[in-house]
Image 1: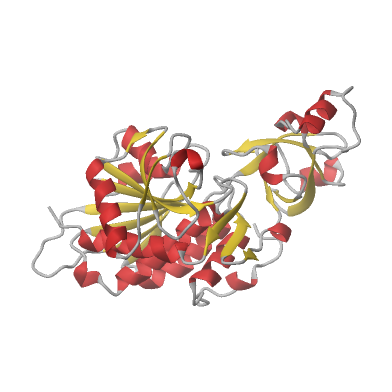
Image 2: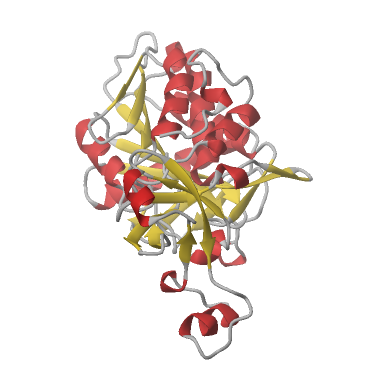
Length: 368
């Protein structure tokens, strides 16, 4: 799928040494829902050396398994830890005769999340460049599109993608209704802002980095684990939670933990800091009380002050599988994030705080 090979992807033996290097690789990888190949490959390279087994299931989820081996205790429980690989993106609705594309949301995206920007069009045979356009800023109120743009109330029917490519060439490249369109690599590099990192798609690349780091830590603490752990990097969370639902019905385990970004908002009482957010509930329901308290206790053990939050306008893989009955228990651990679903920002140390909390939670679990 790659048009220009990502340097960091060139060798399966090339392992990022630090969390920041891992995060940078994940941010540069394109991963629209249902087409997360580039992201999956990085995860496969990084978790395979630290897990007992790794595989890709029929839904496209990548799974890394670490077996609990605490001496003297038979491991009879399993925990599924989920972080999603997909990002908010666009999908082609129609291809116009002049080579422009009409697009709509893939996942919880609005035009304002991207702005007028360079995009990569992931054709079946070739990746081609384009520009997401809202039209001229010199429009008047006389046209519906102009009225929406001038008022700042831009909808998907107001935008198009400029390709400067003929209809025949687009067809030859495999551009069609259903083709994914993503933010170009040209605008994907992380940006330093004082003590913080800013980038598109920290949702869910930062939580993925935390999960991978936690797997690395646990690989050295297998004898401390009483329970088996399945690290599941899921597909299509932003659109439907389809990957998580498949994994929860095919993998052992009674508890699912989603690792996510958490919105920083006065409404929720959350602050931009390293202290993890412990989600107590969201639009799909309330998380299991004992899981919530155990995650908070793990954060405190690691020296952090957990931020409890009821994130009403939010959902996760864990709340999805809890609500459909395919997981008996669920919880959500989140990294405090400014501008969720936009140009997101997290503090230095926030990924490590999440990783340490997750590792402590898993080690503290007792087999039942």
